[in-house]
Picture (cartoon, helix red, strand yellow):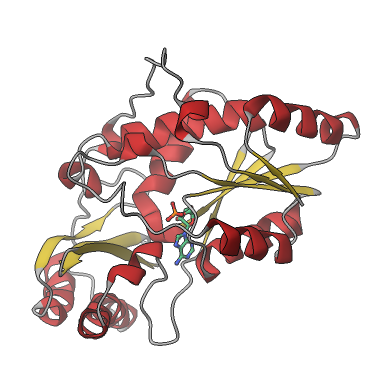
Length: 279
Ligand code: AMP
């Protein structure tokens, strides 16, 4: 595995792969890797000849009062995990490499960035769309892999990639969970043991609604009420919404063939998100 920190060096390394027509897969991350990230890497290794992973804690997607400076980092562990996972190139630029002093251009996502997390973290998806667009330009991969856990991020990236004509297949990989159901997240590290126990309410709420949907419930309000009953122990529920998976607009009753139930909540000072696709 090559670890590369500059755009010039990365382009040079990938030019070699392109000469031999090898398919390139890209997995963007903010590091502090867990099994969710490793599932994305595995999927890239299955589909592509060359897998590039990036670790970049993107400053433009954090709000002024958010956890940019405290976001968990462990580069040496991540490097070992990437190497063991069969990553060919690990790209770890510093902030100045991606956003040099003269940087002024941003990608403004449209309607998909407005509801759900967009309503609570203004600017987050502008930062995500900008950095993913830049990384797509730098790498020009054939495939890029994103996790379903960040459902709205997948929708925004898919739409940005189509709107800006990137010839890249965007693949969404199902959410990887801890054995007890909690969705894996780098931010789970922030949880105290009491918070870790209370955080389980999120997946429990989603699974209960999913079971009700499977049993035939198609009324949106009854499904969200069923889920909400599990969420009373959370410190702040930001949203619990059933939305259309393509438009992210509120789902109407009776629910159609595919709906996503999305949740964001604080446990202590840690903000967690999760979702299930009801189908
Ligand atoms: P992050 O490092 O949190 O920015 O995540 C990098 C990528 O990993 C994103 O595409 C996430 O959606 C994905 N990811 C994070 N957690 C999980 C998970 N539990 N299961 C699957 N993918 C995940």
